[in-house]
Image (spheres, rainbow, N blue to C red):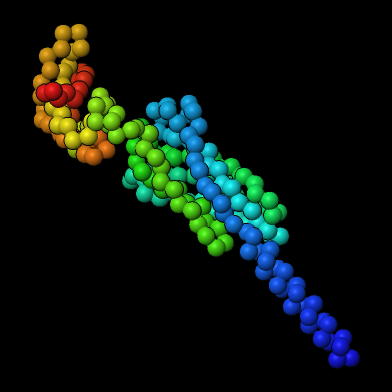
Length: 214
């Protein structure tokens, strides 16, 4: 009788040890993102990425939850599906779609936002690689985005060259333009700058540009 009891306890112990080894094989190996072209290049306020995770689950189930952080204000992020699941002890890859949305066209590829995959024991966080090289940022031609605000205020958001100061100019006629300077703004380390001006209710149309003295 004692021998039977000893054998039963031994079997349970071996089973627990075996389960521990199987779960130790569960792991999140890598996480990567790739923009879906041409969707991510259209100025409609949306960027779409394919998110790929590589993992294995041992003898159980490995669930990887996806989250994004460090986004600019007003930006929302959705994942489809919101998590990836792995089964089996072989390395496999799973892909989800990440859609980044904002209320206005925004050069989001210039923001180093983060993407995190969280599994049972570990997480991997990657930072979005800015699509522009430092050499290009230093000479990039400016692009302007116009945002009407309350109280007859117009916000001009610019994307230009790092550290350069731009004169913000306006004209009401592009056929024979006479450009008038409204003021200046200096681009930050990522080439972004912001300028505020009043809306001219008497003008049928106004056109803006940013120029440098160089």
